[in-house]
Image 1 (spheres, rainbow, N blue to C red):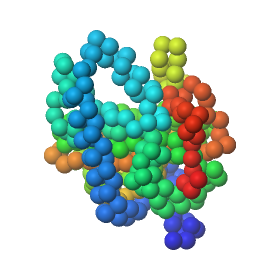
Image 2 (image 1 turned 180 degrees about the vertical axis):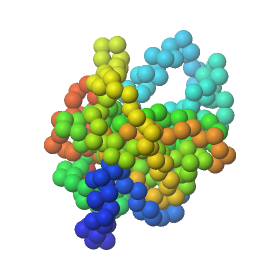
Image 3 (image 1 turned 90 degrees about the vertical axis):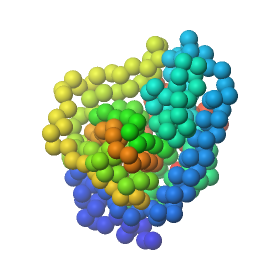
Image 4 (image 1 turned 120 degrees about the vertical axis):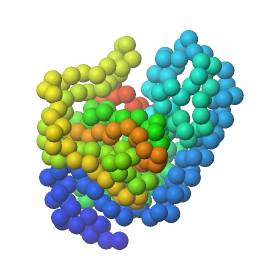
Length: 284
Ligand code: FE2
């Protein structure tokens, strides 16, 4: 595959105009199924562990905040709301209650590392202008039938702040994502609007700073339907969202967030890594 030809000039122009780009057939069905199988294996192990552990419900909120805030360099499991009973046990099987796995599988698991560093992502990152791409965050999102929750309108820069803004999301459909099962929606050209919020660490835990109180106009939003294997690139300043999955079909997806190595990464970003696990690129 020639680097210069992975994304066409027309695709690069539409990336610039829209702030997103939908690239069909970037990953094979086999590659998608291998990632799904690995994710389901991980969730099986997690569910077995949870249900054999006594869970302290009095400290549940604090515990879950800490679990999230220390997950930047780990493989951790986040369940849907209402997934635990009073004893802390899961109310369904792992794949029925899981929301996502995050946030460092790309460095800690061979299958996820290979998928994250595959040519469609690495080459498109170069083509859209990364000089020193650093792989910051990976997530495997389940959006399971009937219980997969909504992701409200946001920009990724809000959560993964760099100066200057550099984060790009690389999203891969592991199942066909349609309007019916809660595909992503985005506002074409919305990346040219100022980012309205910043989520960061604070003395109290975390805080959402309001940088611009203007309400987001979502009237021009379009659905980004994506057959399995489709890669979607998202500018970090682009508002996007996805509704709940009320259908009977799963909507698994993988996301990798990449930042520019030369950009400032503030200490108060929520996602932190231990000094023993520095960010890596696509080939180092
Ligand atoms: Fe996002």
